[in-house]
Image (cartoon, rainbow, N blue to C red; front, top):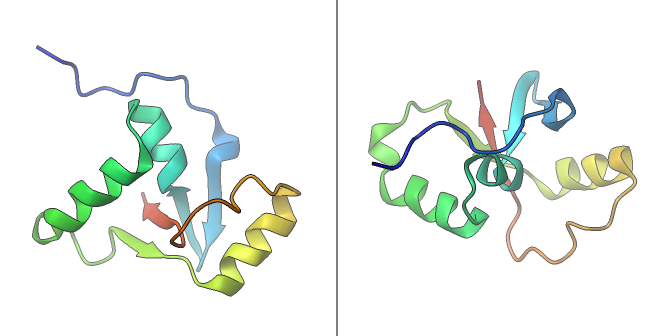
Length: 88
């Protein structure tokens, strides 16, 4: 039986404060569980009724730009859609 526990070691630098909430981005949460972000997003969207209203939100373009500048990284440029942020 496959375990549901995270597979990778988690570090606190993956937690961001956006909209006054501590969040994990979809790519980091997917990596934590060893799945691709697109599969995580698909499962959440297909089962959205199982989650509380404040479970996640999609980042705006402005929030994404601020986050890119904060991290000094361009590795997010290849995504088609803005990332989802998952709350605690």
